[in-house]
Image 1 (cartoon, one colour):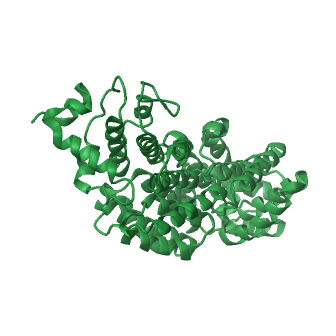
Image 2 (tube, rainbow, N blue to C red):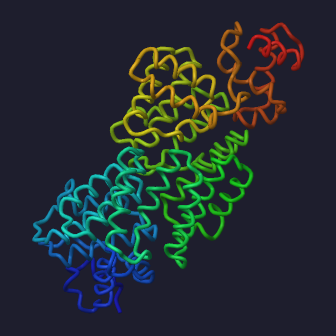
Image 3 (cartoon, one colour):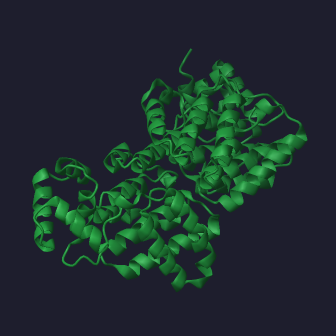
Length: 490
C-alpha cells in the first residue's frame, strides 16, 4: 500500500479509493469528537497524526471538512505540531475557508472547533478563542455547543482571560451534566481550562481534584496521565513543596513519559520547574531550565519572560529588559496570561536602573491588565516583594481607579513573592552602581564568590574586582564589614 499521506496530498480525500481505511478512520474520529458518540480510538489518532495534510479541495463538502477536522485534532492531541500556524493558513483566511464551501452548520462548527483546538495546542490561544467563538455561532446541537465551549474555555484560560474562562467552563460543565452523556466522553480541554483558572487563583485543592479527574477520564491515555502529573507539580509549587516539585518535574521533563505529552503542557511544566528553582533560592538553575527554550507563536508560553524573572533575581536587570524588549513591543500579538508578569518585572528593572517614570508606567499597565482580565496571583510568583509593593502603591497613587486591584495584590505578594535576600539592598547606599547593588545583595546570602560568579554568568575575577570596588566605596576591608554596613543602611 502506498504511503497514505502521499495519496491524500495528491488527491481529494473523498477519492482516495486505496485508502478507504484511512478515510473511514478520519470520519469516525470526527464523529467521536462530540459527546454522545464514543471517544476517538488512540490508534486512529496516531495514524492520522502521521498523515500529511492534503491540498484544499476545489469545493469543501461536509466529509472533506470532517476529514480535515480529524487530522487537525490528531496532530493537536498527539503532539505532531511541526507545521505550526502555517498549516491553518493553508486552508483559512481569518476564520473563513479560502475555497468555496457548501457546508452544513454542524460540519462548519466541527471544523472551526478543531482548528481552535489545534491553534491552542501550538501556543496561539488568541486565535484559538477566535475560532472557538466562531464555532459557537454555527453550533445547532448541544453536542456541538459543548465542543465549541470546551475549545473556547481552554483558549480563554490559556490567554489569561480568567473572568471569561471561568463562566465558560461552568456553562460547558452544566451542559454536559444536563445532557446526561457518558462521563468518559467529557472534554479534557475543559479540565485543562479549569486547571489554568484554578492555578491563577492559587487553589491547590481544586488543582489536586483536577489532577484526579484527568487521570480518571481516560486511564489508558498517557497524554492525559502526563497532564495529570504536571498538575500535581503545580500543586507542589503552591504548597511550597519545592524539593518534591523539582524532583517530580525532572522525571516528567526528562523521563520516557515526555514522549507521550502535549507541547503546551510540557511548556507550562518547564516554567513551573523554573519557578520551583527560583522559589528554592536557585535562580541560576531556574534560568538554566529555560535558557534555550523558544516561545511558540502567540507566546502561549513566554520563555523570554521566564528567563527575565531569573535574570532579575540574579541582579542582571539590564539583561532582563533586553530579554523582554521584543515581547513588550508586540503586546497586541502577545498572550495576555504572561503579559502582566512581563510588565511587573520590567517595572522593577526600570526602577533599579533609575528610570522611575518608565517603572511606574509599566506597573500601572500591569495592574490595569490584571483588573480587566481577572484577578490572578500567578504573575507575582517570585517577583521581589518589597520593590513590587512599593511600585504597586505608586501606581495606585497615579491611578486611583486601581486602588482595589492594588489592595488585592498585597496578599499575593505576601504568599508568593521572592524572599527578601533576593532583593538588592536599598538604593540610598551612596556610590554603588546597580550592578554593585545586586552583587552586594548576594554577599549577604553566604554564597562563595565562585557561586556568585556562576549565578551571575561572569568570571570569578570579575566578581572579585566588583567586590573590591564595593569595599572601597563602603570604606570597609572585609565581607562581614560590608554586609553589616549594608544591613545598617537598609
